[in-house]
Structures are given as C-alpha cells and as structure tokens.
Length: 287
Image 1: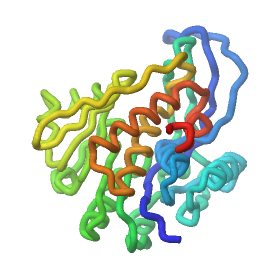
Image 2 (image 1 turned 30 degrees about the vertical axis):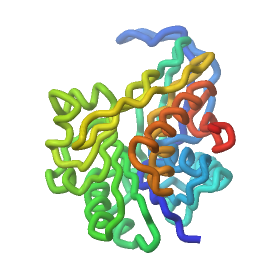
Image 3 (image 1 turned 135 degrees about the horizontal axis):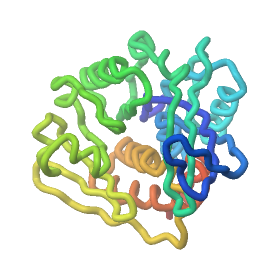
Image 4 (image 1 turned 180 degrees about the vertical axis):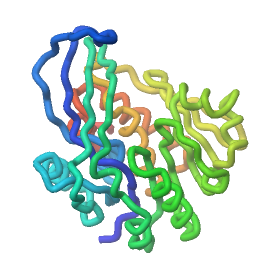
C-alpha cells in the first residue's frame, strides 16, 4: 500500500524521570524511577498520524540496539511503515526528559543515529501517491532542506515543524506549504504572526499550548481553540501530536483550518497521559 504521508525526522528513546523541581546549576535533585519510552520528533509525528488513521511511513535512522528495537516495535504496532527506517552503526538517539508535577518538561537530546539521515536517503524516496511530506528537525538540516526541495518539485505538499528554530535558505521557506512553530519560535522569526508569511511559506501555524493554535494565511489569521481536559499529566510530545494529526488530515484533503481544529484536539488529549507516543489518541478517542 502506498503511503499518502511521509514523515522525515528523528527517532529517539525517551528516558523520563519525574522530579519535584528542576535542579539549579551544580545542584543534585533526586527523582523518581526512570521510564524508557519511544519518542523523537519524527517518530512521534508519524505515530500520532497513524493513530488517527493516516497511511504513513517514517524516514529515519536508529541504532542496532535495544532502544532501536523499542522504537521499531512502537512504530509498527501503531501502523507506521518502517521500511525507510535504516539501522545505523551509531547508537539510537536518546532524549533525557525531566517532568515536574505541573506536567511541564525539560529535554536534552543526544542525536546518535539521527545524524545519519542523509541526502541519499531522500534521493532513494518515491513520491508516487504521496500527498504530504512532513519534516521536523533533530536530523541534519541539509537533509531536511533537500527533502523539502525534492518533494516540492514532485508536487507534494510540504510541512515543516521548525523546532528548534534554525536558519533555512530563503528558497526552502518559499517551498513550504505549511510552517509550524510555537509562540516563542514565532517571536524569534517575525515581529507578528502575519510576518511569518513574509519569510516565504504559503501558510503558517502557531501552536498556543492549552489555547489551541493560530492559522495564518494570506487572507488573515484564524485562531482555533483547544479543548478543556481534566488533568495535565505530561506535555511531552504534544507539539508532535499536533503536527502528526494536522498532516494526517491534510493528506486526507482537509483545508488548513479544519485540519488545525482536529490537531488541536489531538494535542490536548495527548497531555492527559504520560509519555509521547503512548499518550496519542486513536481516531475513535478523538471522536
């Protein structure tokens, strides 16, 4: 079966520890037991999309270690195609995550195998039948730039979750169908939301946490609300949940505002459970 959505990005093992508070410089803070979960911005995005029904494959790399096996199992059990996930001689990428009682997280990423996602991996792709290519960082920037260019030339809609903010060639920005950033990243890029389009993308989405998201098109800005949840357990991977659900709906033909409304709901539901990929809702749970 040909996938209509390709996701290019990282696959990491998330090592998560709950702490009462984050340590200051030179300070040691005791935390809870370490929990190992499948993560990585690319893998998270692909799993979120698959959980809500997308036909999706991930372009990524993992090591030939136990963490790599964990990631492959999570991807495959969620319905993500893994034929394009290569095994690297480097260790699987790891994200070290601390979570405080309010559900907020701090993350340090060791890229490992993700650094091996290369231009040749992009050149080996077939875009026949693909509607959307969604990219995230934590893999080499030159690979992301190349992928967006190749996909655009093939007539594929291109989505980029630019987190963290990185310098992109002007031509790459002009080839973007949708740029996704959060409020802080948007402020680094432009003085106002509409100014994001002056950078080149056809449209932009600013994720607003519990407030939902703002869809920026040449016709103006539309804010889409989130939904209220009873308890925030863990915000890890919520932005990836949004990107995956948005991409899934775009691949099905939804317009950007409708896709963003759906994605905001998925992201809100994801924070009610621990972890990234294990927290993502199914289409039935989204309703």
